[in-house]
Length: 161
View 1 (tube, helix red, strand yellow):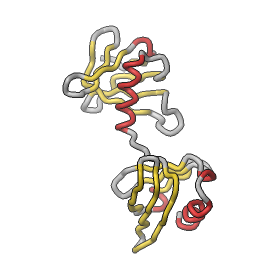
View 2: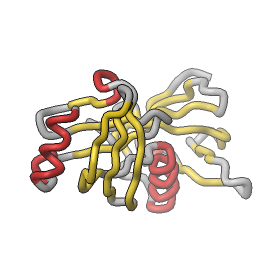
View 3: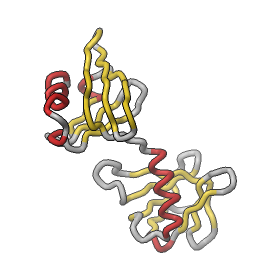
View 4: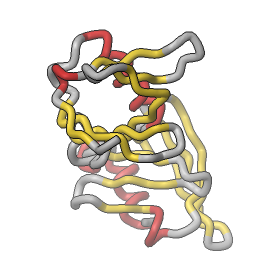
């Protein structure tokens, strides 16, 4: 099977009774499949990579816009599950203990505490105002606009990170 680029009107996504994701592309169903964003931070609604469950590339969806409503919902649910990315709304504390940063934060998904083990690799500044933090377990947290956080949170991040 050769890799394809799909337009949203060419495909339909659905789940079977085992909650596995499938793709209908005009030449029959394919699946179960997995989906991932090629550019999750800069183009979250474009360039959706479609693979089989072993990770073998099947094709790419140009954009989510234009999918039928049920397909859009199923695809968004799958991508949301894949890219759980809580938004940090407040930093309560950042404590450095033995070269491990212990963070206590408030997010749009509730309070979280986590550890960051490598400042250079785990705190990624995408711009002067946009930060993505990865904890020791591989979970990611985002601050889309640092300037929107309270001044204490901004100061903690600038001093510790």
